[in-house]
Amino acid sequence: MKSEDSYYLAALARCRGLGSRNIQKLLEKFPSAASIWQAPLEALCLEGGLSSHRVQNLAVFRKENPALPEQLAEQCQRLGINLCSIIQSEYPNILKEIFDPPVVLYYRGLWQPAAERVAMVGARRFTPYGEGIALEFGRQLAAAGLTVVSGAARGIDTASHKGALKAGRTVAVLGCGVDVAYPAENKRLLREIPERGGVVLSEYGPGTNPLPIFFPARNRIISGLSKGTLVVEAARHSGSLITAELSLSEGRDVFAIPGSIYSTTSQGCNHLIQQGAKLVQEPADILVEYGIAAPPKQKIRRQFTPEERQIWQVLSFEHPLTIDEIFDSLPNGEMSNLAFLLLQMELKGFVIENELHAYRRAERE
Image (cartoon, rainbow, N blue to C red; front, top):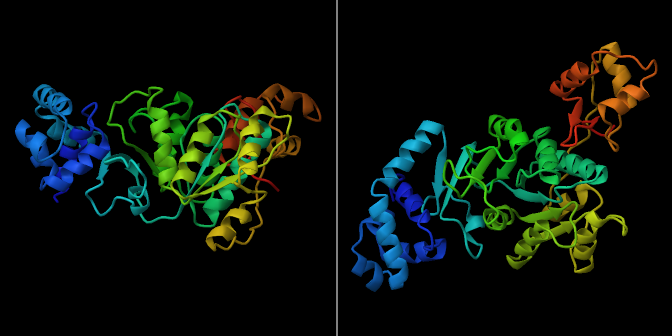
């Protein structure tokens, strides 16, 4: 099928109540997505097997949006957004295997459908323990050649992406359009991912704002793209466990980081381990499952200014500090340009600022 036919498929996917499974059934009966879009109502009913209710919904939708396929093509071209549909060879085979694969994916960045991917998910309200693990695992898994998939949410998702960007590729799956920065504080991260060889993708069209209903659906793409899912931190009832359950239902691997029995953000992970998820203590525990050798450790050489070195000696990887805490910990207690120096160190890749505006070393020594 012609690639422009994908925009007809994208238009069909925008029709509320039609659903990807019904669209795929229609593709088995009609020669192209364009022919479905243009088909008489009787044919959709008799040949396509659609219920009268769905046929009427599609009829109204087509009447209200007669030029939608062309408009989507123009909009994507103008915004620099690519489209991959389930009728194209570029669509990942691993995603086709899930129960309800999205019929279209909008994306920005370098698309690598055959890449080996592992998902990393976790709590939005993370702890320093979880954040450090997400940064370290994201970096080491990416350095070993795996693409790290997550949802660009606050907390563990963001740390996973940031860790992966230090050594390789990452994929951010959004619950909104790929031209919408959500959460707003991740605007720079969502720009950096495609700039540095990764992908930002969504099944929702350009301009689509985030709605709560979109995020559980987004989770099936995160797990569906991945050979396995690592849960770093999760409460007993959380969206991260939904992603893990989706992964299990599709016969994929589920890994979990153990945590304190007294920590609410570790209850979900500990429960997953009780239920049979593989307990993970280091990235090599995941790599060995896929026959991937861990990359050799490289000695890191950093060139600090004298003031940067003072700040570096105060910071650690495990426990992020606020600016006030850093200031109080400095040997002489004076550094009027501390905020500027921290920004410079962040730009150099020496430190990371988290969502709580606390700073930690970017890598473990």
